[in-house]
Length: 370
Image (cartoon, rainbow, N blue to C red):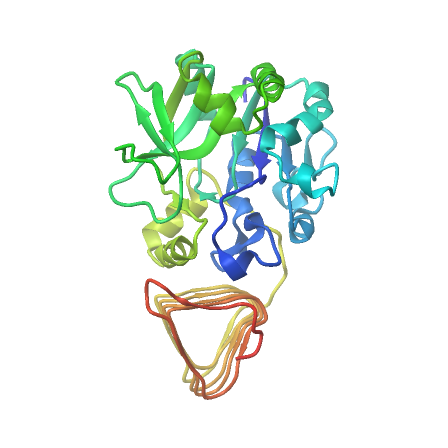
């Protein structure tokens, strides 16, 4: 990359309505796509764009985050000349942790000040996409922008919750509203921002001095008239995954081969923590159609239109349809599961009938044995 850039994945106060799925983990480490975590997409996009230094601003429930990311070797970020840095809050005080992201950026200002990199790209973990940040930076420089916001134009309603953006004919951002606002726009923010490092630090200090501590709501919203804020339109697939309905639907969208190929391989591959598993074993008499199945599974029954994670065992006579079964799940003999999301290690005993309502799938997370 011609201009050196620092990656920041901001997990502070992410909009999270995944209920039981995030009871014991942060949104960034919610399993997705049979063997991945949500954070893998933003992190892989940065690495594929030539970004060799990435800071992850952890917030709460980050034990699984640290376990998943480790030293960053699975993303080739373990070398001395590069690096993955997990930056948790500097205090456990509830009042301090509950403050906005600008406060936490300020607490970690030494990390930014020590960096010699020119630009910063800030992203969230719940925006599931595959994007080339080199193109975004080129657009940022062409427009002589202070801040560039990555946006997505939608043909229909957005299942997840995202900010709405209005652009003028030149691509300049004229208005931003929260998802519940009345702004008439089919363009949403992907919560990805590029700016110079010195501008970010100036916004951090200026906003905090004015009693404001949220990056987008305070530092950017209130300065649209002062700063040159432009919107870069992402043409690829986007999944806004921060509600149960959006998680389910975007998981099901992966069963479309075109979506799967685009999301996981274009413009670059998506990396994740490697776990060596044997190939999935399909027993005689088993039946699998239109499904995404990871390694290490034992399929003896029927699986249709479902996403099956590593180590899942579907017993003989069991039927799984239109469902998501996470790692080490078990579906007992003769059971029927449809329109359901099963968290890790959930067991469905023999002879059970579990059905969601399609758009509102049954969620099994708290109860490990059903």
